[in-house]
Image (cartoon, rainbow, N blue to C red):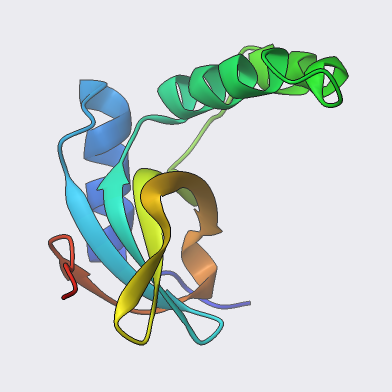
Length: 117
């Protein structure tokens, strides 16, 4: 079993406890570079549920994300919003998306949101 980086676990725990969405982070996971702001899981789930509810084809899945978060112990995932996958000189999607990344799958990280030109 991989032991997650204690620093990133602490960052995730502080985001969760403070219910803040102002911490910017960039991670490398599975060869992808994801950059954006972290959100508490409950806020992230609420936003995903809202997006799904607005979809004619995906509305039925909104209830999966509306379920209350019941977790004990340290966070296991990072919840990005307004995030992009950096690919070459662009970020996908340009407007930012919602990503959930397992902390144990993070290969490298840095504080801050990478921009591109």
